[in-house]
Figure 1 (tube, rainbow, N blue to C red):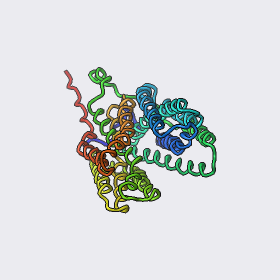
Figure 2: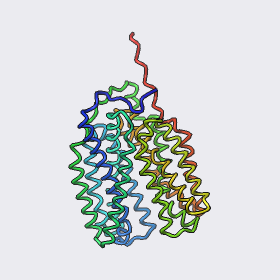
Figure 3: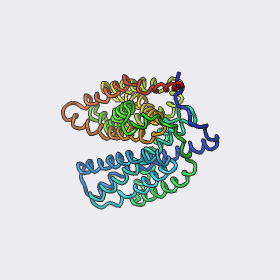
Figure 4: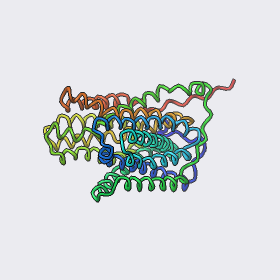
Length: 403
């Protein structure tokens, strides 16, 4: 049986250095979740300040996604070349500094530019910190990726609580997001010394070097799975509450519990996934996790009442919780000498899936009941469960025989 995490080219760093590297990675994941969460809770104020409608806001939010995609594609090769120790703090500083820009925008044009820069910084940080997380996981020799994603979720939850408090107190968005930017810059600076040095990469086979510019089929498949599964996450983020309200007649307060159940199950599941992966392997985690998610959403769609629907959304979050981290981990371990580029491809297409999910469900909901449109992410989960063997690492090449 092959190891779940490929071995290091050289021995692991000293335990103290490795612990500091893991803590620093946790810090950057939390920073990313908090910064983006603070922007999300201030979206209504940005819309009010610029005087734009919902339709134009929707188009401007696509610039956030476009900037993130561009940042991801740039950060991957840069991380492979210069190491995560250089690119993670730079991405964190850019993402943190840019979060105040939407609060300063006075019209649609300046808001669009602000969102483009914020998305770019977010994309750079996302790929760089996930690439460093792969390096940390390789040093530990066991799965640790899902816990980083759980801390990202906690950062977003803390942002929601903090933003709710500051909005309740009537603090201006410029002050709140300005303080967020300063805090993010400070944390990016303080956490940087804990990051690991770049890991020496193994010498690649000449044939691999010749084809490095082409995306390997396995990375393409991992990216497709990331697209489908993050599409499911995007659907839950934007449509879970609306499902209870539209299909079951729940009040707005009760309907909001659907997303709360999903997000809570997602966060808790990610804290448990690493140990589960070490016991049953990433293939089983993806297969059974995607199947559980599909069954949970089917239950939510078919539920006759709110309690059963909430149970379904909870199962949906629990099932999805460990799936995407497995894809990022597999991409990074597939080719250690090009981990950043591989992670950028998988994360980039996955991010497009998260944006596409809500956008696809909306038009479909005009043609059929919302419950039926939610069968699309059920089909995505079914495909991911069937394609879970993609996570199985390729067999190591046999040593060449002496001539």
